[in-house]
Length: 80
Image (tube, rainbow, N blue to C red; front, side):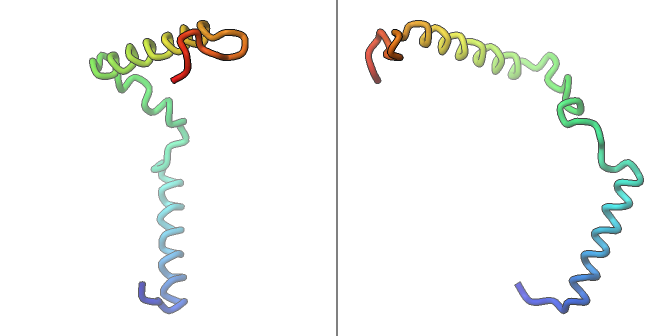
């Protein structure tokens, strides 16, 4: 990267700060939490429903495996 004169670098930074201030004052940057902004975007999405079903099955299998371990933390099915 070629070195820019200090004055040019300051000019670029001042321009960027001014742009950010304009965005803040015009409401361009949301104060709504990200999770509120995306709430409902997967409604009636078959891929999302499949992902949720598979995740639920995975967690249930892990719970079952943990319940099958003895008091020393060893599985009844042997080590992998």
